[in-house]
Length: 141
Image 1 (tube, rainbow, N blue to C red):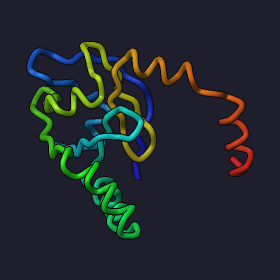
Image 2 (cartoon, helix red, strand yellow):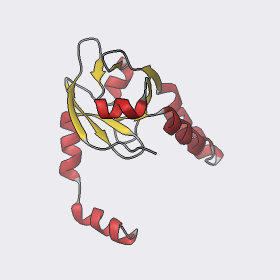
Image 3 (tube, helix red, strand yellow):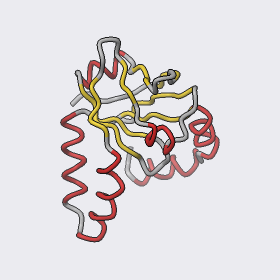
Image 4 (cartoon, rainbow, N blue to C red):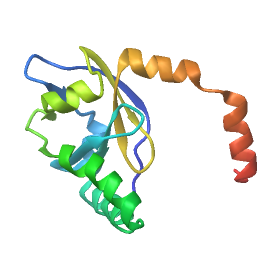
């Protein structure tokens, strides 16, 4: 499996198109699955990654699985990457993630995320390195 990593600064154009970084396009191929993330950003999956994510959701107990399925599936885009390396976001997705003009696309292992630049900075400012370090120690990284 190939992993997404790195951070790329981008802008959304007037037609709600964003440019997918070349490194990420190599992993995605011609298609990407884009959905809402509970952290207030958008997640981008490969076809294989999307299948695995769907299986996890569908394997949850009934009430949990139903709630998550209702959050994820109606808002998911099956996006084709155009010849210039762009995808078009729906207005609904753009609004959900609070995407303005400046965005960043980050790799987070099995998927990538699209963040509004200011929202991402606020998230970083709230990170607590000591809690992350404690988690790493507990999980024996």
